[in-house]
Length: 115
Image (cartoon, rainbow, N blue to C red; front, side, top):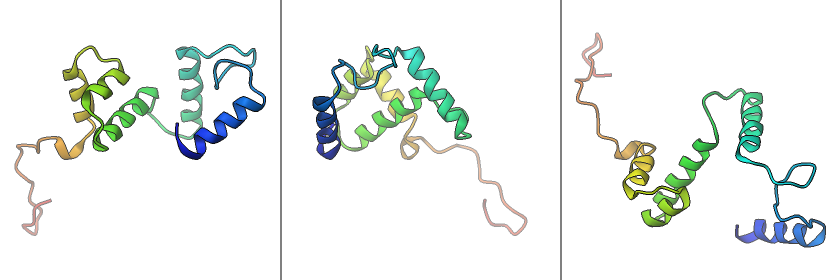
């Protein structure tokens, strides 16, 4: 975190929070992956979205970092991939401008113009 968000979080943590984790359960313990994932799914469902999960956020963050010029090795480390090839596949799958065009011929409409 940087900037105003970092300042706000640090002020809040210094003022009243004595727990190790910023996001925590009512009993003060940290959430596990299953708890966070379940909570996220409930909010996604309430918003009317389908097929959207925590891994989509991970992919979006990785793609944004790649576009911003962050080295692949750093992204690989953050994603926890053992191989840089996995990171490359993970990111390229989300970059439409890097995907090869289809080899199918364009379909013509009745007027002769391609769709």
